[in-house]
Image (cartoon, rainbow, N blue to C red; front, side, top):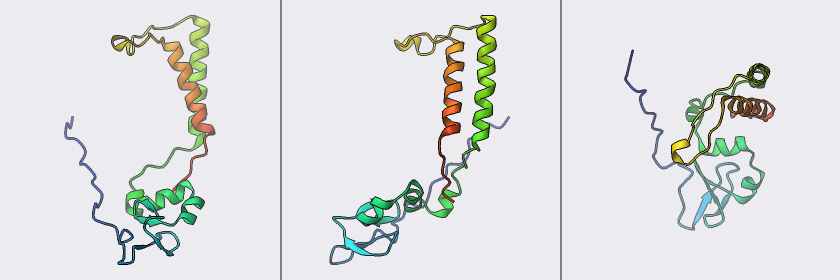
Length: 143
């Protein structure tokens, strides 16, 4: 067994080229290239973005403005929705079997911090709802 932790990934923390402010207090929008006053621009990961581009920005645009392509490559892809539906279906079947047979295990999650007890059946039910919710969510890819 290897007990060595994975190496820590530290991105380049140097000042991005889009973060430069000229002598007139103007910055260049990283999305459209327009020169705008620094006091009206939004700060994003790669520099500044004008108000118009920020208002039209989608989650992908926000990721593009904050992460370089090499950094985006380190972000794992979201599994396809079918995997969440399959997991939710399996958990639903397990929950039905537990309900029919009366099988349950009480748990003391958070009990020593003033939390309440939650049984295994409730945890399976919550996990089922979570899987179906993730399956119905509209996940977007950055790349």
